[in-house]
Image 1 (tube, rainbow, N blue to C red):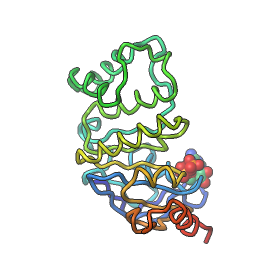
Image 2: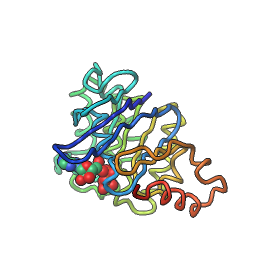
Image 3: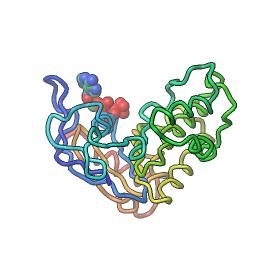
Amino acid sequence: MIEFQHLTKRYARHRPAVDDLTCTVAEGRVTGLVGPNGAGKSTVLRTLLGLHRPTAGRALIRGRGYAELRAPQREVGAVLDAGARTAHPGRRVRDHLRWLARAGGLPASRVPAVLAAVDLDGERRAGALSLGMTARLALAAALLGDPAVLVLDEPSNGLDPAGAHWLRGTLRTLAAEGRTVLVSSHAMGELARTADHLLVIAGGRLRADAPVADLAPDGDPETLEAAFLRLTEAR
Ligand SMILES: Nc1ncnc2c1ncn2[C@@H]1O[C@H](COP(=O)(O)OP(=O)(O)OP(=O)(O)O)[C@@H](O)[C@H]1O
């Protein structure tokens, strides 16, 4: 569903932020992209979404680069900054989503469907939403095209425990529907409870591509944290 083929991204003359990344992300499960701050997670996701041009290699969604997708909203939904207030504060949530649907050539009937999926009241004004509600609106917008692929960068940042709990359940439901869900985090504990599979990166390089159950066979969060620290230590 998502493929990275020798993906390398170097900003100016710095050392590569992503260095020769090769792996695939399968459908029907939540895959966590995890690594310490500065590991290259956002660069991987932004390159996948066509916001950065790779220095070398490719990032593909269902066999194509993002720029080659004919109807991108129908193929991939993305949340790169869940807390960003992108809607006009005076606009109702429902109207903001209608406008996005229209811009993407999507039927207006998708709006109530995504509001239900994220359990958000469409009558509320965007400016009156809490951070958690703003994150729900961002996910609703990503789901408008009913995409088979979802890409989320640190979606639980700033969420309270109830919001994080809701997000975990929602991502698992979306994966159980057969979607490919790729979600980044620097917090291993958060991902351990959401993801089925982990891609661990550090210094731009892939350090592990394994099921959560392989990294912590005893299911103990401390075992997983120890594995994370071992895998991501500087080399
Ligand atoms: N636009 C840019 N120009 C130059 N360097 C950049 C740019 N964006 C990111 N970097 C550098 O690339 C490296 C990887 O950054 P990136 O944001 O992809 O990591 P990350 O794993 O998402 O980090 P975090 O968890 O802190 O968000 C870092 O060294 C960062 O300073």
